[in-house]
Image (cartoon, rainbow, N blue to C red; front, side, top):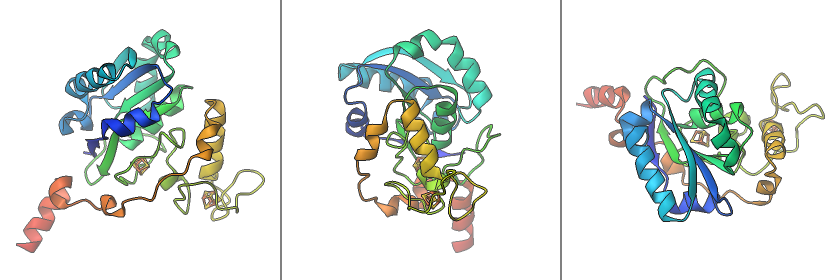
Length: 226
Ligand code: SF4
Ligand code: SF4
C-alpha cells in the first residue's frame, strides 16, 4: 500500500489560485485505506473547497488511479464536467496523479503527499513512478514527477545537458524529464509555472518515521530490533 497524507488546505488553495472551477478526482485504492481518499476524503475535500468559494463542477471516484485504462474509462464518463473545469484536483498517490495527467489535457494538482511506497501498489501496469518524497510538486511540474523522471531529480529546471532531441545527458535512451515537463506545461497553457521557484525541501519527509509509514517493513524492523 502507498501511504499518503493530506496536503494543508492553504497549499492546495495556493496552487488553485485563479482557478474557479475544479473537478475532483479521487482514488478509492490505497488513499481510501489511509482515509485521505475514497468517499470520505472526497466529501471532506469538496466541503473545504466550497467553503473557500471554489466551484466543484464534478467528482469521480476511481478504484485504482494508477491504472490509466481505468482512469480513461471513468473520466470519459464525466468528460463534459472535466471540460467545464479549469483544473483537476487529485486525491491519490503521486503515481495516480501522473497517470491521470496522461489521459486528460487539463492541469492536474495533487491534494495529497505520498510518504511511503513501502507496500504493494494497486494496479500499476505503466511507467509512472513516485519516490514518496513527502512533498509532492506535481502541481508545479504539470503532473510529471521531476524526482523520478530527471536523472538528477532536479526541481527547478533542466541541468543544461539536455540534447537537442530532448534526451537526458545521463542516459541518451531516455527522455529528459524536464523536456517532458516543458511539453506538458506548454500543452496545458501553464508555461508560467517555469517562472516559479520550488522552495527548499524538508528532506526529513523523504524518510518518515516507521510509525508514520506503518508498512510491513516497519513491522519487520520492529521484530529485528526487539
Ligand atoms: S513529487 Fe514525485 S516523488 Fe514526490 S510525492 Fe509527487 S510524484 Fe511522488
Ligand atoms: S538532461 Fe534532463 S533528465 Fe537528464 S539530468 Fe539533465 S535535466 Fe535531468
